Image 1 (tube, helix red, strand yellow):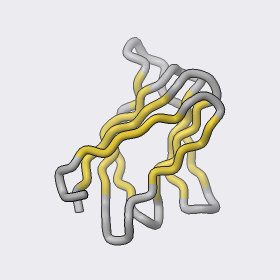
Image 2 (tube, rainbow, N blue to C red):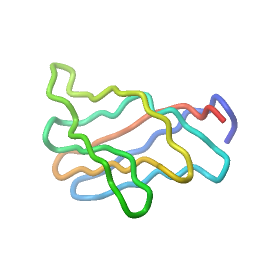
Image 3 (cartoon, rainbow, N blue to C red):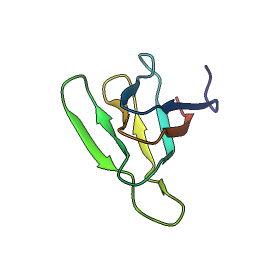
Length: 91
């Protein structure tokens, strides 16, 4: 992958999905989509998981741009409806 490439993925019901870029790669997560109460998202380092439930608003999406790398990467969990994320490689 190269700088500017789009990255995205899905977490289906009752699964954890980790998106861990390669060493030296950084990604800006632009949005996480999902049903309020069913999808959690956060940073993960292999031990610690800082989570945030998808916000309850009319569009049912959580937008909080955050950067991930090989050390602190994305974890998304869905306990019901499918969740998804999208971002851009920045380094």
